[in-house]
Image 1 (cartoon, protein in one colour):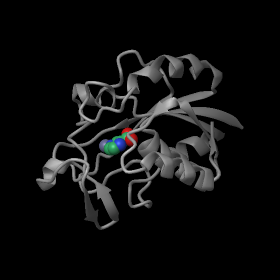
Image 2: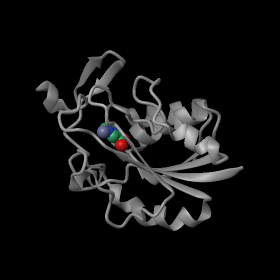
Image 3: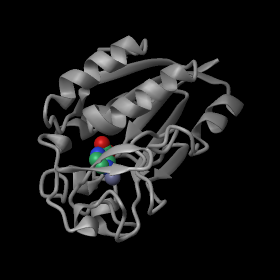
Length: 196
Ligand code: VGL
Ligand code: ZN
């Protein structure tokens, strides 16, 4: 069985100067590149929203970082970000993107997708689980942005699916709104994720 690196959403909009900038988001790029050769597979994810996505505050004429109730639960409303094909949705220019698979998520207008495995209804799959299983991958190391949203949801889902998951927090950065970082760390540990 083998061990994959999953690089979550290291995109311009989550780096300083981007639409949903995560403090220090660009600081992790060289460290992520450096560990890629240690893994038998490298998978990169890309947040990939159509314009007018339901997770955008602008779509609801609301203020960013407020919340709204969606059929699948409470949704944070974000600034417009990672719109398909824009420079903001592109990977950071220094990230090595020669990995085996790029998986895109958040492309359905009506539902957000923090996790690389399921949309925010926790039901609709992205296909990543099948890819990993058919390649015989049972261990995942996760890095990237943002630690308290997409890395967190991806790690918890992976652990629930039975993968052995490690999150390298030194190679992640967080948004950290309203205690979201502490809650994410606790939730990942509860789910059996190794948080380093
Ligand atoms: C993310 C908020 C909205 C993330 C994506 O990559 O953590 N956060 N979309
Ligand atoms: Zn998004």
